[in-house]
Length: 141
Ligand SMILES: CC(C)(COP(=O)(O)OP(=O)(O)OC[C@H]1O[C@@H](n2cnc3c(N)ncnc32)[C@H](O)[C@@H]1OP(=O)(O)O)[C@@H](O)C(=O)NCCC(=O)NCCS
Image (cartoon, rainbow, N blue to C red; front, side):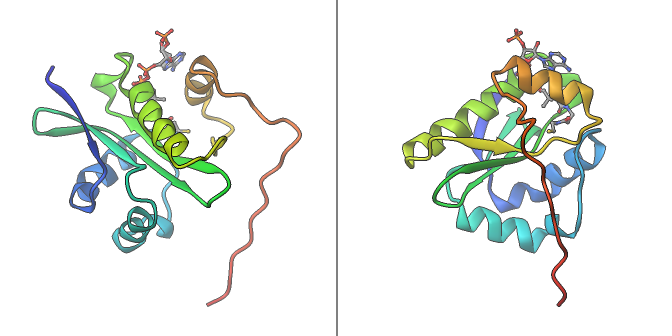
């Protein structure tokens, strides 16, 4: 294994999207089009990372902040590279970059049925916010 970590650049989008598509626990939508991810990366420079094993993308994580709090999205590691510290290393990089920007807390969205994902996040120090509920609304064009 020849592992390296990189800032998430838009040219890695096709590989990252393929990884997300093949990863259980990742919910994709029109929000994840190439144009939207390019806009996300442009608004949040230096916060999102990928992991590569040689020439192959084996991990990806999106991270953004709104000036107050940080948000992680779509953490995924290729099935044959799991349990080797890749996921936590990606998270650590994004959290360090958030801290460098003065952001003191970060949130994640986890599909409630994603038991493995929940175990991972708990293992690396994240706490469920049982008193909070996510509510959403579509915005008409
Ligand atoms: C969740 C995921 C990103 C973890 O990536 P990973 O590279 O295997 O995680 P790491 O090797 O960095 O694990 C960090 C710690 O969490 C633990 N862990 C990882 N996956 C775990 C699981 N499924 N159950 C219990 N513990 C787990 C590891 O054992 C390790 O603990 P340790 O430091 O005591 O050894 C990966 O399983 C994945 O891509 N899953 C599918 C997509 C997904 O669900 N993403 C999360 C969306 S919210």
